[in-house]
Image (cartoon, rainbow, N blue to C red):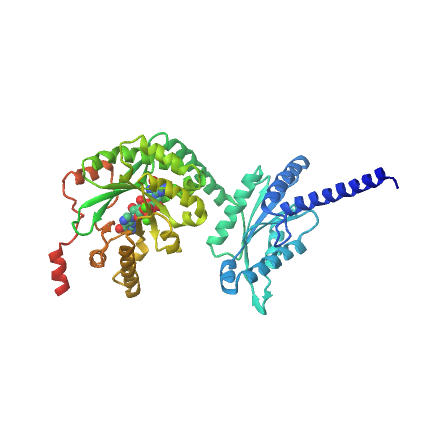
Length: 468
Ligand code: C2E
Ligand code: CA
Ligand code: CA
């Protein structure tokens, strides 16, 4: 064999190797490593292709989305390895149950999917559910997590892949909220719900530029003087037909639609304009604004906020940004960058809803966070549940030692306020003192018209009560 032949042969082998590597890489990029099923990315692409083919041939395609019922519980009690075994077994069952031409996928976590052109959807759903509900043995223990399933059909329910997935998810969600262990098809009830959401979406898109969303303000009280020292900005929607809507009715959907940033921006701008004079005149020290965890995932968030702030007359030191722990844990490095950037400008950071999530003290300590807002769920139990009372006292004690200010949220009863004040809580907020109110109303209170709700008992009354 000549030198050239030899080189050519080696080259040929290398090309074949590279080809095989490329195929493997491609396959790995499309498969879920735990179950060997198709992953979410590849699944979405395949769904689009299959719908295109079905459209050409005039066939129907059903999408089944599946979620295990007690997976989190099993994962927590038996451990992650057992959880992985369970997921792998579910993957195996899906694969074994699939008819030729059906496609199975793991969409992530304990969520799976099946694309099928079986014309008898109810029979297919029942068969699959029965298969998934059979008990498994893991580490010698028999477990039956059970599964829930939502189904939507092309073209009867939805005309494209994104609607089909959304509708199957809606059906699944309804099953989950009703206790799971069943399957449900997308139906008239869900279609009506979808229409309602679409209407709300259209209205919300109009409401933002139309100025229908405005900031209300809830006073934050100094525990010793009973005076208003700050306000929290809370969004309200003046809906033309439905009247005043609370954030619960529109913030979640705005987050889902990616509109929350625009809402926060509009609310922030008006709130700063209204409250800057109150700060300038020394009527309050600061205002605090809520930002959505979604916004905070935008790498430019802090820069944009600083830019917006600089176009107002509110000093940076008079602004507190309230963030929730969920956000800290989503992307800690990014959270740190935002928080440090804001802190460098003098903006204060408050950790909102503390006591509801992980209450991660270590994360808290490693960031320039000056304020912690104790969640209403803790405050509610203060004075009623001795253990919670002790916990809150200890938290207040620790906060003082660490130079972190605590604001108690959702103070509704005098007993809670008295307990908190005695335990050294400097700031409180809640219906006992004042509800959120429009700018004119807070301003009137700030300028001296008495806040009737401000029922903070005097220190003397407190002392009398203690003696009694
Ligand atoms: P949050 O930040 O924890 O705000 C406190 C919520 O508790 C407010 O509800 C307030 O009205 C309510 N509250 C205050 N004191 C009491 C009390 O004594 N008892 C009871 N039961 N509730 C009390 P609201 O205004 O409905 O806001 C709900 C949530 O919506 C807020 O929770 C916040 O997470 C979010 N939110 C409000 N405005 C905005 C906004 O402009 N942007 C964003 N991203 N989220 C907002
Ligand atoms: Ca808040
Ligand atoms: Ca809160």
